[in-house]
Image 1 (cartoon, rainbow, N blue to C red):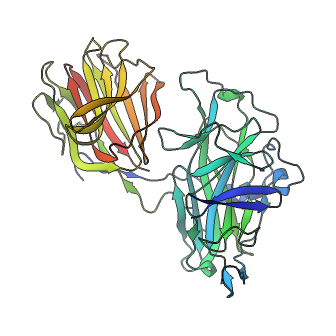
Image 2 (cartoon, rainbow, N blue to C red):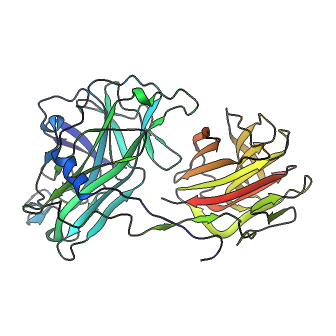
Image 3 (cartoon, rainbow, N blue to C red):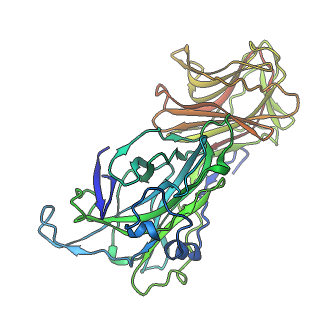
Length: 457
């Protein structure tokens, strides 16, 4: 993807150029921004200053609110005719706070970058942009150059996590500019995203209490979706929101701009979710049915869960009601009475059939070997071996396995039990299978499964 350098005053950014059991769920992009929140983000002072930003930059000292305007200009290199700027790019950035941060095992996760506009025509908010994991890059604190070190990563919930500090901030944006069909109908625009602190190494020390990181939001307008950068002749910001501390829980960072005379406190409340929800899938087996599942000999449903019935039969069971592709997270509860590493339980995803699939391969016993495998054309190979040895052997409590598959082939897996979440694999890349079914299979194991969920962004 190409990017265009963007300089405003003394800051340089890069902006992208361009109903039955087995219920289908709707994954709403939950929203909790109020009119007062939006107002405060543009008018209340920073909670702290960003480390290394030159103090003479106005937005380094506080938020900079601007009335919304889509200027009409004649920009000869593109067209000799008057043209109204009609493309928007929401963005955000995370920084080390001025007092410094002593954490060594903390990242900032950001997700759900979005923009809406308020229409004069119907006085309702309309979605312009929504992207779960934004694009972006690290910049020096004086915004002079970029780097991708330390590498960003995709978390199990689809968020993008980064490590600001050590002289760097992280600036992010969507993949594409979005065209505003009728700029004259735009009464206000707001941008928002969520951010929280996460552990860099999930098995390492939790030092988030000593992390001091800030985040804020803004929106840029552009001459068009394809206009080249030309020293602020083709783009500009609509004001920049205040810096606030990132905490252990997701919170929203927002910014807005409204036409002169429009009071953001009296307009309709911001939306409470994505108007075009995405279907997912869930099954809890509570009715002792497994709707649309293939149940060969050796696996059945009873007692409100799916379970294998024999040590000697190796059933291959899939949910055939949908195939999943792109970015999604597959969660399933699992436990086994198997006491040996040779008793294997596999959680299947992107499966076409028993000869083509991915699998998380878990052994029995108290300290099993755990593999990420693929079977292509009937040939099995190991993609990665986990350094963790999380046991699913338990007569009572389940272990919740979460497999996050990201578009482009990145695979991350966690195991959660008793309040502890362990990362088994993080961003393992393989593109042999890009879509397929979910399911389970076993080899010489008696295993129980429950609470299957597929969540889409």
